[in-house]
Image (cartoon, rainbow, N blue to C red; front, side):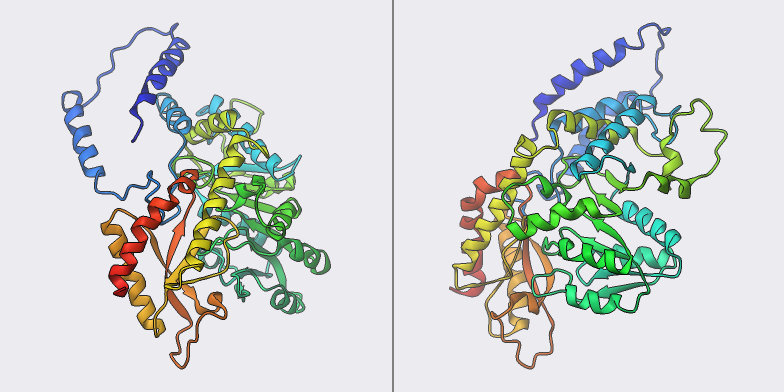
Length: 451
């Protein structure tokens, strides 16, 4: 299941890499601990069995997508060099590959010009975006929706910026009327627009926010860490597709290749539309930036040492699977969305379940019907455990009851959220495994609900 046969490709690539250094004098590497290496690795493999099967279609819980084999192999290949993409001296080839790969990401969003680089993930990428936002609009507020990732509020505290939340509508998207009313105070410098929330995959109404930016003069930061690649999918709802088409109007974008981009952790990316943003990063490092007048990636990054291997893996993946509509990569995203829509439909037809709104991307949220919110929340956890005992792994999430509009009478309970089951169907294979998933979920539910 873990496809060890691809290691043959890595061996051939390593021979090719080694040939490039054949002119150097030979060395005999003294590797500490060599005699025990086999035993240690076998022990590590045994320890790693204590994991959920993240790579398998029966894992439909958190946002964990296996890297593409070419990404794994390219990353491993680069580790024999172990480049550091801070300065060109530490990662000459891999820095060039990073620039090419990042340019392809920017082009996917419709940008001919940009400034950007890879980083450890969405948290660091969003930190850089908000850091720039604070420098360009000092004293101004940062706004994000109630369903935006928690890191925006936390990062704002780290940066000593003021961050406020804007309420969401019943589909988990930023409420444009509430945003417009807040903007009327004219003290907002940046609005964070989430294209695929972590909880439900909801897409903020960017097409309706862009005109407000033109009216009130705030920056738009698009957090597309999870959903950004769905710009390429051809089967999204027309309204959702329209909002994705407006990403080109953003001032900054975050996307995580280590989610839907088929990359190992950690691989995030921050993009700025205006290359002049680079002036804000300006610093001097005479002991690293000395070998070339070309751009050293450390000159436009808050992070210093960064793995060149991540850039090599992304570059290789985008060579194999170009970021284009109707391509193989785009079709795999379409299968994920199709699987989520089909799974949601099946749940909605079963009177044992409550379902939130239809998925915009590939995340499905549902809960068992019960007499009270407390009872439903307890049942959700029981079904979660029962399914896991049958090798189907879901996730648990606290979801606002408002997202189950017209399906729940909360009465006087006072609860505003419901403990739900959540499925992230981010593997294209999930479409083929829906019947198998249902064949496990059905008896697990019957066991817990006594039906």
